[in-house]
Image 1: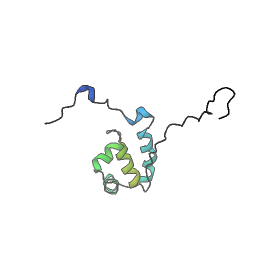
Image 2: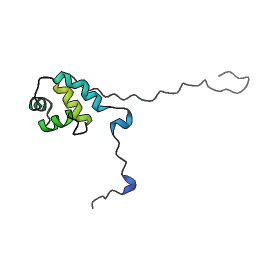
Image 3: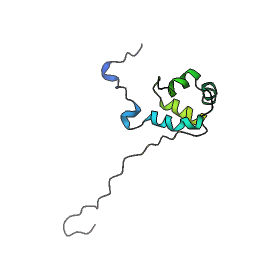
Image 4: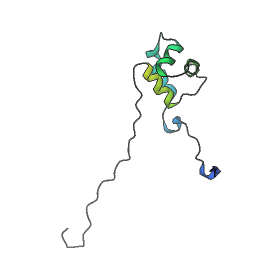
Length: 102
């Protein structure tokens, strides 16, 4: 039996920009490190189709995290994505009954 997704079980799509990640800006940082290379050379080095490389750099295709990571690799660098867990609340002192030691 095939599972059909219901509207309630489908989460809304979110873009990295919704979380403060500007992939276009990161792409702009990578671009100078690829200067002098053709889209074909960059595509081969990063495992991307040369047409996709061209579309990314002309902003005719939205950048994905994977594509930016591939371009960073093609440039000889790497893209770092890091999870920062929430700060742990400070441990409170144990409460004791009045007049008693802990």
